[in-house]
Image 1 (cartoon, rainbow, N blue to C red):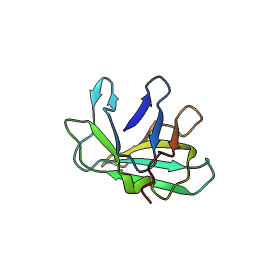
Image 2: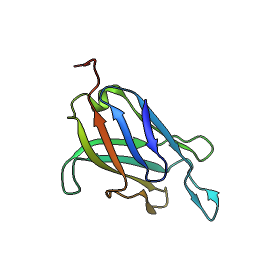
Image 3: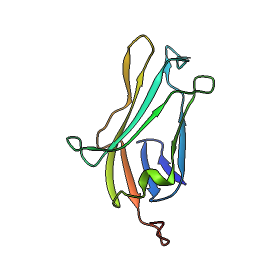
Image 4: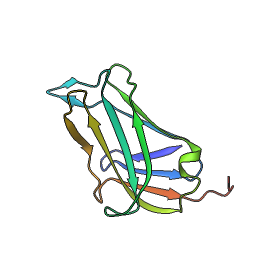
Length: 117
């Protein structure tokens, strides 16, 4: 299970757990995700580091994107703090950063009691 601090969008997850959350991006109070659009959820240890997790989502429910972190996505990662961002790429090529990768958007991975490796 994933814990989300809604005011900062900080995420917390135990390595090997399934985590999911949903976003409903809007422009002028209207949702805009539709067929042909893509959402990218990207995680790095630090801003200039390598990507350690990247999810591309192309299916949406009524303009809502479900971001699902599967157990296999975190099994090879070390416990600690990471940064993430979420970008939308619309079918017309417009790119929007929905959640920027800064200290206020972090992902903390914790080790659980049971190891899944």
